[in-house]
Image 1 (spheres, rainbow, N blue to C red):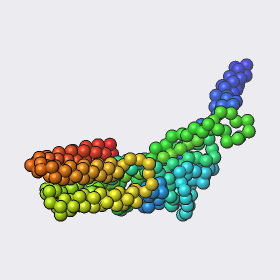
Image 2 (cartoon, helix red, strand yellow; image 1 turned 60 degrees about the vertical axis):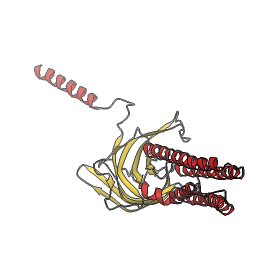
Image 3 (cartoon, rainbow, N blue to C red; image 1 turned 180 degrees about the vertical axis):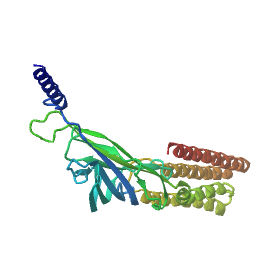
Length: 328
């Protein structure tokens, strides 16, 4: 009898253990974690005119070797205009399955050039799972191995860092899947390349002509408008500087490309044109005073206006440049 009861108890315990180990009916299985990483080996063709940049990188993924999936094959580069892979590798290790591929792509980026050339940018490469929803597959970031080759250089720019963040992205559609309701959620990874423009050398290259025009306009105040030759030269000199600034404006526009933003460079050019306009008006009024036999008043006005315009111009420029550099 004792042996019978022992057998019954052992059977009940085994049954309870089996029930405890068996997932409840309808319970969702845990999603597969895929560790995603990237290493940038080239960055080039930074093109604000076309709102693009190009990059070459190695991309890899690791996951439980028991899961027969190919995460790099189902990965979708959301903001890529071109995306070419090569040198695909798959390796099975004791615990994990490893996938890697070389990527060359051109990616969209909204270049905000309001503070040009004191601008900085976060170039993003958005990578999303295109097949399995987040309930089945999630990304984890391999931050320790993600980075950029130290030999990568981009003329005119300084690369600060590279970072990879993983999350999920929600779509307000089921993409027409039968019997599905609500939206869809997919794993997403964002590879960010933080860059800063080497501002000062480019700034002086683009604005040297503008500041020379300003200095010439200040010098023109010391040309005596009572004499016909000097007055004509003074007016012609100021008008010539206006044309020089307008031509330089077109040069800056060609560098930046088409943009609706009112950039720092455009603000400086507008301020310079206003200063030249004031200088031209002062020349005409000074001539009027001389023809009215008020030459002493005209000379005092010229000296004072030269000082006022120079001070105001320098202060406005300093404020604009400081604000742009601080915002960047």
